[in-house]
Image (cartoon, rainbow, N blue to C red; front, side, top):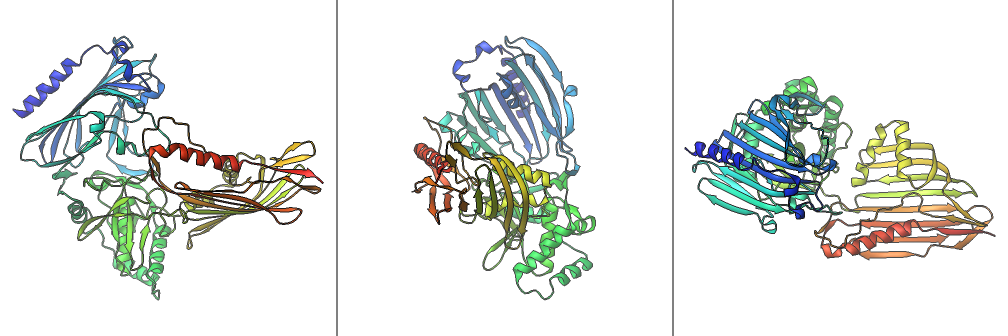
Length: 630
């Protein structure tokens, strides 16, 4: 009976909203700052058991311009566990007149994974529609069933920036015996209503205005309205699970996905033990094992059935010499165990945005695996998919976020390594010889921490690409000619050293007998945040860094300093900035600069102060010294 009621509700909803989709019916307040307007976004989930659910959705979007097309989201994913039952799109013109109807067979059908994937069963059907005119409206009706109840859709009442919503509705229906958890995020500020009973939960939102992005925004999900859901008893690719907290979830991963997948052949164990024979320092053992993995394996994605979440066995990786992040992490863990070092398979949401697993809502989260190795004095981190990243280095892909360590005692949320600003350091030293028309520069740049992350890849680039990189890096210097360049990647110390020689005839300015020269010609910071009189959200600076510059400047023959730079020194909540120019002799100057940017969350009322701080840095970095003929 409940299923019949659910289907009747869906039919009634379709009847109600088979309506006038003309552009003129949109409330003008929803057009402000919007590239698209969602007329209706509705999803109903019927959970019939811990391994079966049915999802029915209707999404109606009026696209106002070319940028709004990305908000259509006309796609449906499927695999062996997920079946598309209904998929249809209807297109309307500006006046609400139907101009096209696209059936499921006319959707493009392709693999849902990238080129680096060896095995995958995941596919997607999507609509590629090129409009004749804007605005237009697209209605997408979709229905699918799945046994993968571990994936409860996270519902966003607003999808992103520059999109407004007339009506958004989300329904979860399930038998009273099925237990679930939910977490509301940021609903009150947007007037989202929630009702619930023993058979489920329902949310409604109307007339949500478009949000514009701001420089240094928090993550969109951290301030936009959304709902997270999870079943206590769930199914993933035929593997059942139960979890109400991260400890239980980690136990499920360990016992259901990792168990008995760490065995190695005796010959491999003997080989890896021989590799570390005579080494007492555990850090050196870890480096040896990690280098062995880098030298003998390569990364290939495997996303077939439970293989999308369960690692290939260590024995199989050892045989074929490749694996995905899960397989290579599990393999490295097995090798370390063979030499007496305990390590932990660790799940992370990996991307440069520094997304943490939700501390308060345990569920199937994360998109990557890497390895945690706890020692007495520190934690070692290993990125097992890379053949070039040094042992114990984390870049922007996995740094400073909550991750899930998985072990025999269950799961534990811990923070991955954060690099302090002083640890993410770039030190630039240079000799700059100025002629009347040309400058010769001899430069050495040492980088550590997150700044190392930006540099070590240069070692594998072609000469042409490296020269393009430096010309872009010094794009405010015209007519740069790279004469020599060398990059030394010290993987033990995790430091890159760049040595570059270049000359230019396009940097000096002349005014009669005077030469104008900006002494910061090698590390200028020109960034100034956009003006924002009505800042709405806190300022989030995710990563700090430290730049130190020390340039010896040789004046052109026959010239002296007429006007020098005044010393600058700033120290505030956002960082520190100091610049000075010392005259070492009649013909030599020493330019020194120090810029420290601090990470943190700062109140929106501080935005103008931060912008002024960056304006001062940009202005001083571009300031010039005046030389005059003696």
